[in-house]
Image (cartoon, rainbow, N blue to C red; front, top):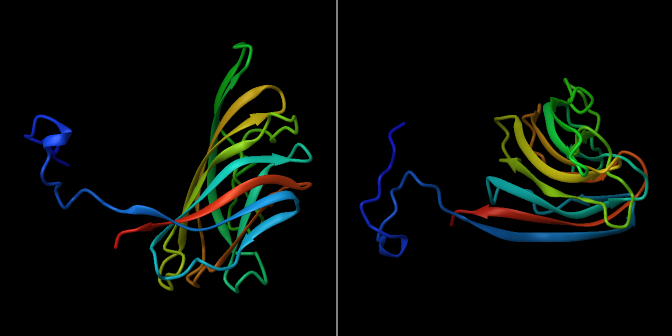
Amino acid sequence: MPLIKYNNQSLSAITAIPASIPTGKLKLISSQTASNSASISFTSGLNSTYKVYKFVFVNIHPTINSHFVFNLSTDGGSNYNVTKTTTSFGSGHKEDDTETLFSYDTGSDLAQSTSDQRISSQGGINTGNDESLSGSLTLFNPASTTYVKHFISNTQHYHGSTWSINSFMAGYGNTTSAVNAIRFQMSSGNFDGTIYLYAIDNS
């Protein structure tokens, strides 16, 4: 792939952008705030209007040391049981600088499973007053009736043993049915926090 070189001498002097560079803006579709809630479900807003949707998590704080998870639905939220195959790894750094980690997380991947998918890897999110998870999950073309449904997430959370954990997860919902709802919850217990649903608008 050739490098694109701008001949203008500064950003303020650029008068045109090549067509190969994607454009678009985030459009807020909706948001929900959990308050000691068992789950948050988005049962509207995922449709054929946009090809890419992004969920942004802000200060997801559990009542029990546990993992933040999600699942997909093809029937408007009546069932959250889409078959998924995923991969997951994480990096970590301890507060006192005594340990680091970078590893594949076999406990967070799925192989043709309808189970909830972990968004946080390596270890659970702790329950301390200042501890939480933030990050995002991108879902691609959920309304397609031709392709499987790809997704990618990147989050940061405070592990229960004073670790900073950066979690990376990706995979696909192995269905050609349209995905029209998604549910977020903890693997155990309730949680607080806000989730925003954005679309990438290329119009």
